[in-house]
Image (tube, rainbow, N blue to C red; front, side):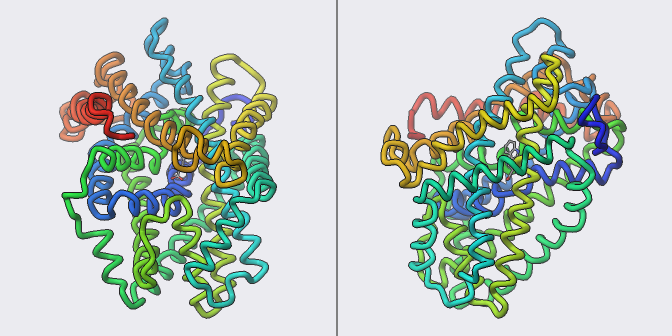
Amino acid sequence: MNDTVAGARGVFGSRIGFILTAAGSAIGLGNIWRFPYMAGESGGAAFVLLYLCFVLALGFPVMLAEFAIGQATRQSGSRAFTTLVPGTRWRWIGTLGVLTGLAILAFYSVVAGWSLGYLVKAFQGDFSRELTAEASAAIFTDFIASPSQSAAMAAAVIAATVAIVLKGVSKGIERASLILMPIFFLLLIGLSVHSLQLPGAADGLAFLFAPDLSKVSLRVVMSALGQAFFSLSLGMGVMITYSSYLTQKKGLPGMALSSIAADTSVALLAGVTLFPAIFSVGASPQGGPGLAFITFPTIFADLPAGTGVAIAFYALLFIASITSTVSLLEVVVAHSVDRYGWRRPRTVIGASLIALLVALPCALSFGGSQALSSLFGVQDGFFGILNIAFGNFALVIGALCICLFVGWRWGIRPALNALGVAEGSWLARLLSLEIRFVCPICISAVLAFIALTGSFF
Ligand code: TRP
C-alpha cells in the first residue's frame, strides 16, 4: 500500500500487494495458536471438517461481499454502509465491527505478547535442552501468570502496531511479508515433516483427520463457524477497509481464493505439526489456550540447532501476528477518519490507548488476578469472555448482517458489478445463492439453535 494512506485515502500499489496484505491479516495467531487449541478442545477431526466446510461455503462469499462494499464505496466502517444506503440503521454493522476490532486487538495483543516473550526465551537458549511436556507447561504457566511480563509484552505489541499504522500501512511491511511469509511457510513444512516422523504420529493425524461425527455438538459447530471467520479476518470490516484502498477491481474472486488457500494451509500445517507431537508424548489435546505455546518448545528442544529454529519461528510468528494487529487497528482508525474526519495520527494513538486499557485485564486473566481469571466462572475469565464473545459471536453476527445487507438491501447486482463478476455467469449465480440464502440460513440456524437450547454455555 502506498504511504499516502497516511494522508488522504491511499491505494494499493499492486495486486500482489493487496493479496499479501489480505493474507497477512488472515494469517496469524488464529492459525498457529487458536485453530489447534480449538480443534483440540472440540474433539479434533469433526471440528476440522466443519471448519473446512465453513471456510469454503461461507468464508469465500462473505469475503467477496466485504470486497464489494469496499470497492463500490472506497469507504470503510459505517461510512461505507451509509454511502450505499443513506440514512438507515445498517451503518451499525460498521460500528459493531469497530467495537469488535478493538476487543479482538486487546486479547490478541496478549497472545502476540506471548510469542514475543517466547522469542526472548529462545534467544536465552531456553529451548536448547531436552524439555518434557510437563516442564514446558510449567514454563508457560509461570510466564503468563506474571502480570508484569505479559502486560509489558502486550503493550510492546500494541506499540509496534501503532508505529506501523502511523506510517500508513507502509511499503516496508508489505515488502517484508513478501519475503518473510514464504519463509514461515517453509519452516512450518519442515517442522511438520519432523513431527510426522515421531512415534505415535499416526494417532495425531487420526485425531485431526478421521472425523468421529458423534462428537459434533452445537458448541463444536459454533466454534468451527467462529474460527472460520476469525481465521480469515471476516465479519468486522477488515476486507471492506482493505478493498477500499484497491483501485482496480479485476480478479477479486481469485484474490479471495488465494488468501483463503494460504490461510487454510497454514492452519492445517500447524495442526499437522502439533498433534503428532502431542500424541507422541501422550499429552492431552485439550490443553486450552496454552496448547501451541507448550507443545512447540518441546519440538524445538528435540531438533538439532533447536535454538536457531525456535528463534526463527517466534520471530516469524511475531511478524505474522503484527500484520494481523495492524489490520485490526487499521479498521478502527479508517472508520473514525472516514466517518468523523478525525486526524489520523491522533486517532491511532487514541484507539490504541483504548485497546491497551482492555488488553491489561486480558493479560491478568491467567492467574495474574484471581477475580479476572475466573470472571463469571468462564474459563480464562475476562480474556475467555472477549475471545468467545467477540472472536466468535460478534464476527458471526457481523458476517450475517453483511450478507443480509448485500443480498437483500443494497442488492446483489451492484455488488457483482463492483466485483467485476459478469452477470449470468456461474460465479454470479453461485455468489448470489450463497450470499442471499446459504450464508444467512446457515448462520441464523446455528444462532437460533443456540438461543433456543442455550446449549452453548
Ligand atoms: N485472522 C487473524 C488471525 O488468524 C486475526 C485477525 C486479524 C482477525 N484481523 C481480524 C480476526 C479481523 C477477526 C477479524 O490471526
